[in-house]
Image (cartoon, rainbow, N blue to C red; front, side):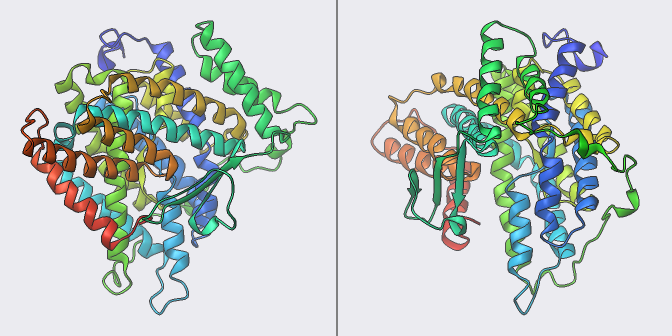
Length: 464
């Protein structure tokens, strides 16, 4: 095992990797409950979605560990699953309704497109094309984004997007392109809120004391404290009457409808899935690879991320075959990396826990959001450290880096941050080159992305 995963070379060991894998799993386990709820509203059987979620996360995360030796986990993506559900629901009153089977077909096709882009090396060229400052900005932006996810999941911060906005609230952010995100403080008297704060304090103290496994221990302690009467974040009664044996006959396997692909507007959905997943996955893989130190050797980092992109592409179509929305690399993998995970053994461990969740679903769902939210907030602190690598005094890269960092959390969308970073860098580097400053090279692919981004916002819109 040590030689297969190159543990000594990567400066890690079996115990550290397994603990890191468990930490990643526990910060991602919420998807096992959330995804069935979201896709259930689109007409898919919630239990079937649960099975698909656990299987997809388990199988493709293990594949990431075995074939890439990379400590990144995959699962159906938040945001993309919401887009899937709203696309299906929104179409039900139209003349050409989109069925769940058609939606899954769109996800499957987007995965095939990713596979082609990966095999032709186009996705890998992104690593060379995008300047280092933007790569570090992506890491920082994702750190802030994942912090907001933690704050939102805990109730410490409430977030309303677009149609969910019913009144002007403190902290509103609106831009001319139609992004509208409202942030305001949650109720500090709610158990989930003050337990998140307690979890944050526990993890922080353990980290200051340099305790290995601080994040994992924090999650476990908050979960145990959640059993205390009066707090009641965790109830063992939830285990009663549960079916512990997975009913595989309810798996929505290979349920595709390609017949009406051209007549229902699904091609637009395919394009949207492709665009958002392209940037979301790139951002996540680069951000986590940076955090794990793989880009200290740029060629090694490029090779690792390139192979990870191949597994990710297969996972998109594979997840659709199992009956769930787009499977993607998870930013929560940073939690395991923060615990010392450096090899594929971390991913394999995470994947095994997801497969075990098929049999221990009630237990896996006991971990309260307050426990995982505190961990995600701490991960944001760790990822913010990359900001020191950005030279903000050089405005050609400083301004695009700032826009990348700011727009990810404020628009609640990773792709928006990367998109604005790309457009602003190309414009500023072009102007600098015209003025005689030749140190900022514009890779040909950056020009391609520049026009794709412009077209995307012009024809699809800010929320597409």
